[in-house]
Length: 93
Image 1 (tube, one colour):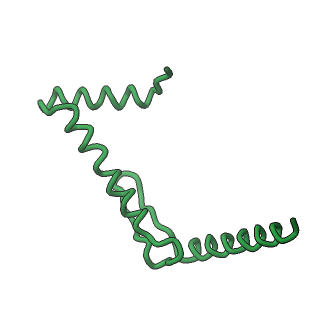
Image 2: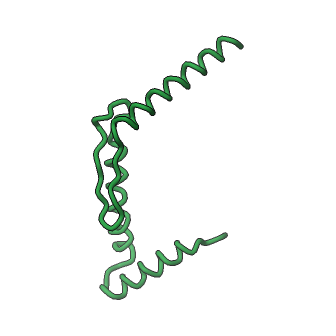
Image 3: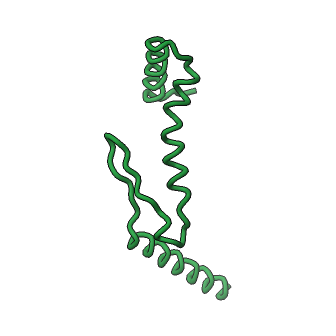
């Protein structure tokens, strides 16, 4: 089994915080993952075909994540093109 360097660093940080603040490692892991789970939920809450349903997310020390209306409209357009292409290919077979 191969263990990545980032995994080892994360475990070292969790262990250090656990010892420093006298908090169980499980609670430290929960605190660290909760933030990113909430970001994931906000991103997933957007409706695929509704550009206005996507929210901007500001992550401190990282930046802003946003999906512009134009990007979503392009994704919908290309999705429809792909669907039309697949349908035309299936009719030819």
